[in-house]
Length: 326
Image (cartoon, rainbow, N blue to C red):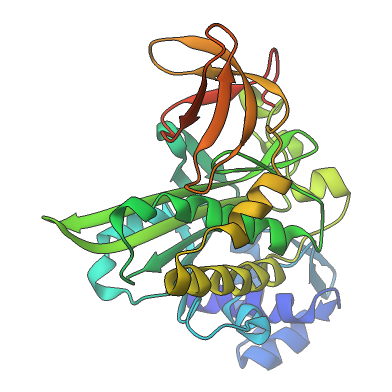
């Protein structure tokens, strides 16, 4: 997709300016015929490119490595960046190619066809309308501390998204806007025997997805930033902001092992704390009052049926409202 990505890069860097096919062809040192053909193919793949006569522009910015790097303020997170047109799962790709990837490298895709969420749920992403990102980590981290990376990532997303909206966190890995999910986090590990080869953090964010493009069975609990805020989101600015906040939290965590800097955000922005929810696993469904998040990242709850307070550490369960997602 090199030439098509060159077109996307040029249009994204120019956004919201309207270009002409002649100017675009000149910038890319290609014939207008080749540009027209490639643009037509991108439109057929549902990329948000509008054309009228000789004019061409994007409905909203698309992922672009030059646009990300232009705004990136990190030492190693997000360096380098891979951007693919279409793949089944950025996390699967990262795990399959882990030996060739370096610490801090990220994988992005315009379209993800078989993304993975927690508990094996699918996470789909239409072409250009969302962010599918996987971050590779190869630093030493105690095995028992790895689950905390989910909440470190969630706190980083909250900080990154505050330029657009005041979002909340549904423990441990969902980002909520107006009581609907707009993003999710999935942390996966790869081992050789007892040796940790690497950690892959997968993130999916609905940026400019239209509500009608969300599967019907998910429309009551999923949405996008654009749908809720009535405006387009620049994915490159969001990615750059997220990577900066993640690096700040992650480096500090590796150095001190202190969790409070990011867990305090998870508590403050929790959509669960102070309310009653159903805790559902494979065997039972119990109502509980959500108290807090403890220093290890566990969810502190008091069950109604026994009045006992416990700390939930397993993410292999669901937390649901009486009749709604949150």
